[in-house]
Length: 321
Image (cartoon, rainbow, N blue to C red):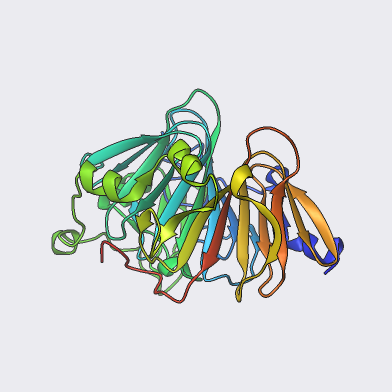
């Protein structure tokens, strides 16, 4: 493939198109300044305004959330895996029915694999705009978002109603639910019993890994972060590796399905038969299946890159299932 043919499979950080009305809490104070990005796959946005950068199925979705300081994403759950790594800033992740079952603070490069079936949220607690990158299991990302009841109730007070069709309607802008479409029902008390209150030891111990620990493990070969043999032992429908300068190689390799390269630190030269390109932190590249390629740092200084590839394992529920 020529560089021109590959360009549609590369999303540059500076070209990311945000949606500020992606979810039901888009008008709720404290959550109304967040930006949602759908990079690969349809994602879970509830807004028709959400731009999808790459629609090619990969077996998983890639997205991102960008938020200013003190902005939070409200409590929600997914039916498939949800993995985040911190691209920039300092973030607090919290979970539980009311968000008080536990919390953990993640720094740049840290990764968290959040169990399916629990309510979770996150907040930028840094001093500048920050971004976290997200990997969601499955091509349809589990069919959307499941919100904690209070999130739906609070949103209605600020004019946003979620229909049972998964679409948002802004009543303050004059929108109404279409005929035959009822509001999304809130979970009943019996249904809420199926959402466990996991302890910090359970979530952090099983699902959080620190960047510098992973860098140390990637000294000679890439660090298998998530996978059957990973330092996070899970099979969420994809595997995640961290590659560093010392574990990168010029040797060409290929996969039997599309894979994704996401630089965390430094500039990376990706080469294939027919061309090459350079990726920077925040860029996302989809590599076609069965295409030999290599990725190596192109400049001096710290360099790391997250690599994601799908597997034949079910997208979820996973290790909490």
